Image (cartoon, rainbow, N blue to C red; front, side, top):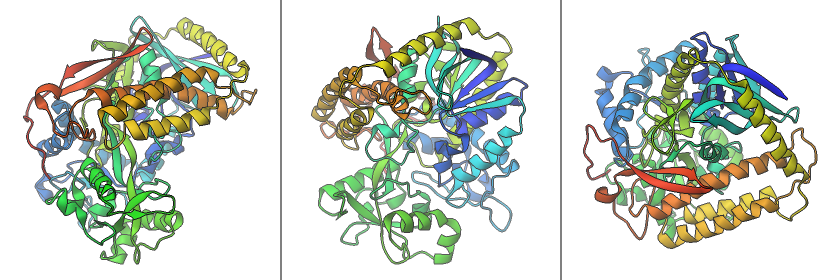
Length: 575
């Protein structure tokens, strides 16, 4: 049994995790970055469009307050407004930091950052590096983190348990896929930065690592989740595979058209058109298909066309090279002469581990789980509310990654890690995982249950929901949870046992899925990404509240918490 001691352990190696590592390491503490994939393969590398930040207010007439207001309105007023202010004020610092370590931002001839106007934004404020922003950020940041001798990477190590006792964080237990054994990481402080859980759904822009099991593990460790019912669908995923076609295309002037060649967004968002927020555009595509106005792919999927044929080819080649590559490689179309087939796919989780504005992880009563933070998509600071605006996510990851890293480093200097608590947890996990591998054949497979889960989530927690669909989905989910004990693993080994990994992921995913479906059922209104056909209007009197989820007595429970409204009262959300 191996238990290593660190000052700060970071779970996840995407933008939020790496930014936290830099912030913590810069303050002289020893940092472990634990990730179930190699760092450069973390999903942040797939971000395309850019990062929102008010970097040139005088040039564009923009302001921090306007960025915050757009974020609040885009989130359908479920946003905790001081979190939006924090995002707006801190994001420019992160752009300049990333610039300083070598991110090749696009710049105008005068040397200032080039800017795009993303959906729901009042001004152009998205800085970008072509349409490969995540790739360039992760490449520069990973290289920068590697320069710190006090940061140690443990890649292909899947965290299976958070060690929390008496409301205090002590460390994590991880399955070392390379060696097949379990390792303990005792730490004075921890940061969860594991991203979202798009693989709970059938069609998603997220990578295969984004299974979302950490949401379930967090519940079991006594943490609370917030607003899990708000799942964002990106309107332009490539058909049939679901690969992201960046909002940058529409920011550069691309149109959305139905099978009649009509720019149908004029019916749904007459002012913003294709640059309405993502929830609005995704539903518009859904309803166009429902009306029979979409194209039908040979796979049976309904889609619409993304049209760039009217754009300057040289500008497209310069600013959207990935769009051209993906369209030709994965859809077999030449975008200069044909429509790009797109439809909505799950893209982002607005909800996550409940935190305060500083990123400290909280329990069901709002108490800090001492020593533990969460950042990025894994966390819910309240900054996105019911719908995230495009390009706010990279800003969020960088801002709260830094804030969490700084705070965790400062806290780590005040206490010693508890090696004994983590060693006990490793022993218990070893017994659990050994029993999973030895379990007699029961007829169920992890992949089979995952496919069922994905279908259930599409039906009960999809773009459009109602009481019956969500209630039936919850019943079917309960059946899967009961059958989890019948899953057997054919691979009796421990090294790179992918069936074991899938089963461990599924164990956490099912709890996370329950919170999504429970919220879909209980929230009787339409707000942001949550659209109820039986409650089609927003209801601020009853539902201007956050949904809080926690685990109690072996059951997922829920309660409500007021939204922090400090500056802007709710208003009609029109685009």
